[in-house]
Length: 188
Figure 1: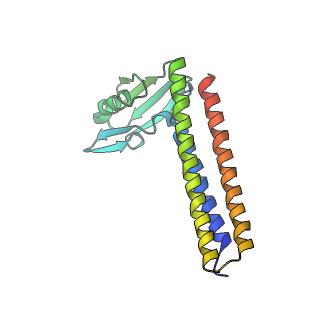
Figure 2: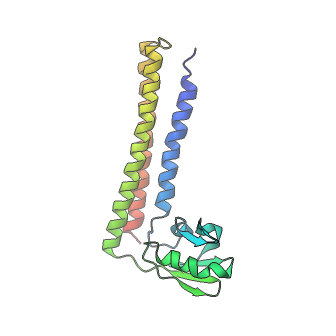
Figure 3: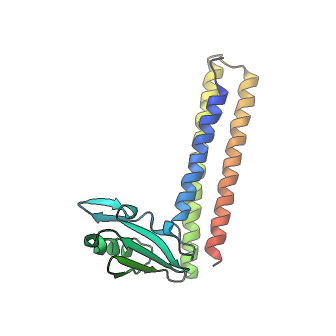
């Protein structure tokens, strides 16, 4: 049979899982009050004539419940790393000590927690839109097969239901991840 539903389901599942993984990665960059190296992951540093990820010029570790430690590998870029962290929009005030930069995490205000929760909701909505786009692609593929008479109407309806169930499961997982992140943000 030219219409390969197994390959289609595998592709759709992989793409929906990718949307969920992207969401989790974005969530890791949102501060919840606990120190996490993932907080500094999105930061880019102007070093060696180009804009590089922080992970390319330094090692980030947790040195306490509300303290991150950034070990810069090349002393000549220490100032650039410090400036990048300060200008990141995360509200952090790094302090350099040689090639080590200490980054104390200030306590979260209620206003900041609410902003973080809104940002998390935006990330979750973007992931849902991505999952729905994947569903649309799957449905269009199935309709194309039906139009070309590669599958019957009953098979097309059954497969469309399977695509919808996959989408529903992904949306449910996104909602669960959002609820968990909001709980982390609100309680520290």
